[in-house]
Image (cartoon, rainbow, N blue to C red):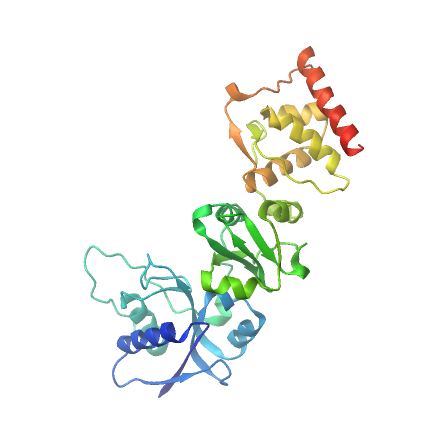
Length: 330
């Protein structure tokens, strides 16, 4: 029997190296035919993670492929397979050997490994089932990773394909003109992007400040995607968002003034006479984008009790609101 295997999205030297590792994993009598994604039938597709969610690859996966693995470059994993992702360069072939023998022959083996090594045992990824399985982490984890400078380049994508390329070191984002305003959904994911692919992928895209681009798109998130907020906690706004000029802007500016001083969430809601949803969502958005932080009661400067606040603080807030109205025409 001949097994057809395709590798897509790698430069020639990396592709050749993975082919060598695949052959090492299989019995010598195994017949392998190396094919391209244009072939009518593919037993196993190895595809670089950068191209996984493109419409063309998704079509190939649905119509032609029995099993697949996404390829991600990571110098710390050295051949580990986690869910449907194989990390290369491959220095340890045992995980790949287990996966290939199980996929092609239905053989479950326990490879001989050093006692001090732990390798996650995984089952072959069936294309039809895996496409229905959402492997993305929570929105909190995704946006947190976008704002960690050590992550270098990340790509943000969903079931429709690439959304944006993020440079976490400079907090810049390259976005296609058609996706400046986008509705994030359950299929949202992120992954590392090799630096060598960034220039070619970002050529036809507009560049924005990351938080400026994310703010209006995050505010359109359904509430079920937002982190749960305890209204009894205290919060301090460290960086003001760039608010959209819409009906919610007035409330956003008022909340920003209060939380800039450090305030109890529930007290701000009572003082401004806003709904729980408006105030809690504001905290969710700013928390997701790391524009603020939770603080201890000792750091709270905005105090509101029994619907009365101190005379000095009243004047301070009125003065701030007055400046905002004058400056912004509110």
